[in-house]
Length: 221
Image (tube, rainbow, N blue to C red; front, side, top):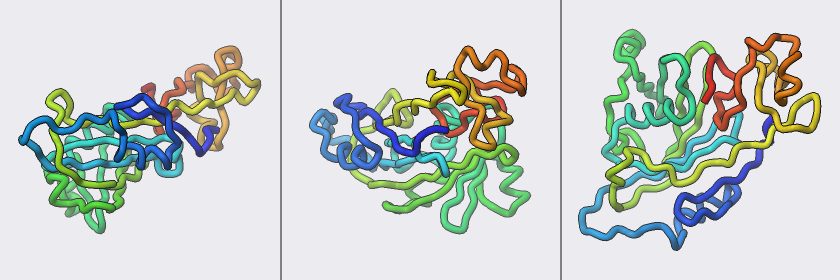
């Protein structure tokens, strides 16, 4: 199974830092561009990690005026999308569904809400993708500050964990596949050689990818 500790690289200086240190570093990185114009907006720095899989994490930046749906699309694209499953954010006692029909059926809200209207600095909240084979994430609004919006990106990745080095359960080679059946018991991590004769069959294997959805449903990265 993946280790629970991890490191990642800063987008700005390329330095490698531990999971706890990267938050502090991002605030003081000397390579981080400073606003060059007076056209500033309120930006949110969010941390995202896999619930129960904290070795997978992201630090991201996005405008406070962005809607939850933008964050949903980003999380799907970088970490969880496989078969177009439903998703939901849980903030406080409220649930925000990506699908308006689901929101109506459950008497809840949609993701058509701006971040600034539902989040406060320091607040933690949850995200779920796929209500069958569910991937759960924990998010935190680390801080809010004035800055410039990146015109090329709706969401900017400030830092991301390096891929965990997961070893084959049969030998010491790096695992390249994981069995979508065995993974539920923390097993099934296999190198190329031992993937061939895995007892569950090759059709049950999925590639090892840098995501908390690794080994789930049909997710291949």
